[in-house]
Image 1: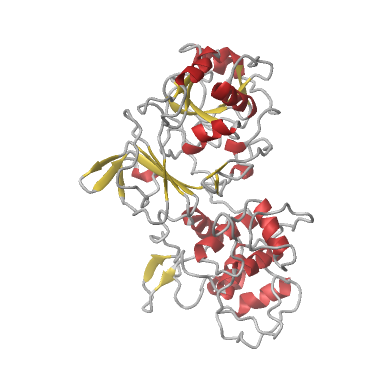
Image 2 (image 1 turned 60 degrees about the vertical axis):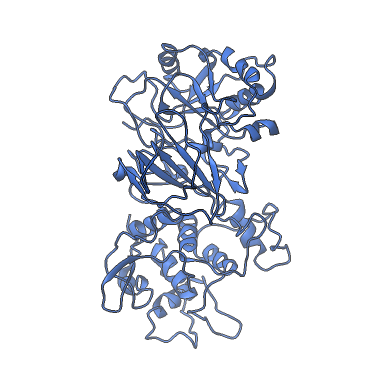
Length: 502
């Protein structure tokens, strides 16, 4: 949906004399954490890219360049559903009427979004810092400040600071993360990529093909779980479906038939992981020093082009799927590849996907990922460290042998031609029945089954029936995990999380 921009279209999108007149794919955002957010701004707000002095489009967004105060106001103005204020525009001595940003700054001051500095200036070409940006965004959007925001772990944000409420309110909503696990860097400059992400969050924007889970009209209200954190990164916001507590969700009206279809194959749960290094799906944690590699994808039209931070000798899943999962801890970005094989100096893959772990945005409908359902893999793995902590706080990934031609969000892709409505669709969520007795189960198996009662498991791929995915780890106790094999599939029920997309 395009936002009305009226007479100011040319200046809003100008961002100085260097911007193009038509939106182009930005080659400098491919593989960048901001890629999806910038795409949203292109499609929803009409944001365009830079051009050179001769007027030739460059197809560049410059996501890592700091954004100025004037540029941020222009970006917000382009995306605001009601940018035209009724008040009188304020004048600033450093904003001349001939400046490209003069109209939007005038409108922003009329709306009360900005007031300028105590000396009367606006400082349009000064990089906006992270605290200032939040104040402007809260003022310009309909997102209210929280009266009693939850306490934070940022060591550089204190209750006495003028920006405390802005930072705390944004953090409680999952809009922001720190520059590190302990600091927010309120006086640090904001980049254009970071600004794009914040604008998308504050104005709840989405593209015509991709939206956040909470905006899907067929999805029941989400009951947030505790949230999952690993290596200082939240594994999606607490209200993401992977983290959703499903104990109160209704049983799906076709639950009995779905369960019967899966039971036509195997009858019991099976942990598809253990101490054997050939079992499970491995992952690797990387950082900003890991070299980025280009890929060549078989399903290029549904693959995030990358590049990907593939280490020299990455752990690769055994068998034909050959998944490589990479968690970039510095940016909290998840990179996943399917059917990966290095031939010469180039990685050849079936498909690949990149996920911003701070976002609820889904892949476009009918797009795959590194998994058949279009879902990320890592969030659904049973990991040894979390089991040892005594609690799993997310849904699990599992496979079934026969699925239908359809999916339920957050899945975005199917891998079947069958129109049998009694087969499970991709994205179907099962829950271990609340009254099923697991009091005799001990150790790691008990932790896993407790999670299946609270968070359930999601159909993510075609494979062996009732096979639950876990991370490869030699520390698994196989004798303990054997207990899971005693749990019958009949102890599960499907819950309603949305309509099936054919």
